[in-house]
Each structure stands twice: as C-alpha cells, then as structure tokens.
Amino acid sequence: MSNTSLGFIEITGVVAAIDALDIMCKTSGVELATWERKLGGRLVTIIVRGDVASVTEAVEAASAKAIKKPVASGIIANPHEEIVRLVNLSASRFMAGEGHSPEEGDSPEAHSGALDARTIQEV
Image (tube, rainbow, N blue to C red):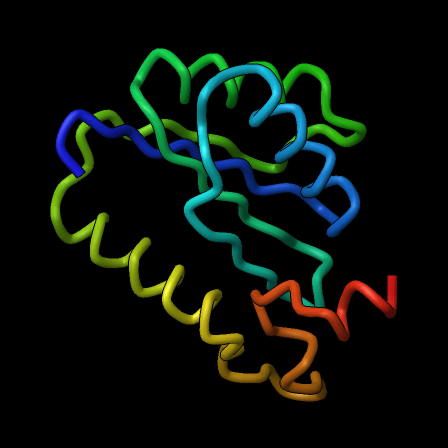
C-alpha cells in the first residue's frame, strides 16, 4: 500500500454515509476500502483509499457537501503497516459478510458491514 493514503468519514446514519461515499468517489479517484456500522447503523465510518491529493479532496468535499455534517473525519498519508492491517481486517469482514460482536440488546445483523442482496432488498 505504498504511496496510498486513507481517508475516514464518521457520520450518523447509513443514508448519510452512502451520500458521503458517493460524493467522495465522484470528487476524485478514491475507492472504498471498507465501512463499519456501530449502534445499529446510527454511526457509520467510511474508509476510502487513494493518493494523498485525491483522498484529501474527497474527504474535504464530503465534509462540506454531505447531507449531514460528519461527526469526525481524518486523512492518513502513508499509513503505518498496523493501520493498513486494521483496515484490511475490517475489509475482510466486510467481504465475508461477517458482523462485529453484538452490543447488548442489538441483533448481529445490526452490526454487519456487508451490503448484501438481503440488505439491498430491505432498503
């Protein structure tokens, strides 16, 4: 992942997160690395990757134009290998359709990072 940067947007709501991701991807040449949902989808973190200029432009555009203001955002140029490992771990769970450990009172489905056919049909 040399010469690659990571951009993070944490925002409330899946719809707002999808809007922010759309803005980021259309603004510059970034791609989705992974996403995480917490609190039953009420808090969503989108992680994109690309060159530092593209990631910076994408995060700034989404922060300014998304339907909701992000709770937090950040850019890591040339991330440390442990950060890359963490993002790859999240991405592997995303691709496998695995969720996160359920929080008390939440169903496992509420924590899945995967956007599968079942999720799309529910929307």
